[in-house]
Length: 133
Image 1: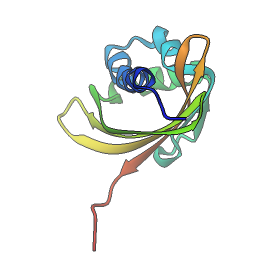
Image 2: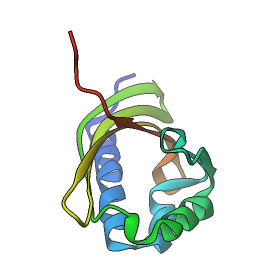
Image 3: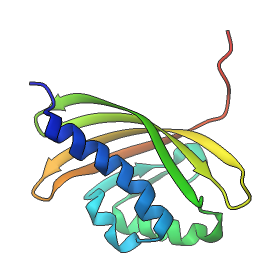
């Protein structure tokens, strides 16, 4: 069964909402993004997997002024797993307060629940090495 246009729009909006909420510090709205049992894997940054919305909120608060001032997402690709789960791969660009930037890949599993689509799993991988032949 193909992902409907309506679901594609909802999932793309979900992925985009992450940057808006994080950049605005609206951490009380993370339940609009994540399932309660979310696993947020930041192992590539030395933090390991965070489990649950509260752990994500606590990590963002602990990072303080080292948080990016801008989270920008692009290149969103959806692959249906089943009628209630979709694999999402996207690229992120983070802008720091000093103007430096970094690139990441987000590998997500989003699931449809009573409140709509939510991220149930996210792995963030830093892009540190350019393409070499």
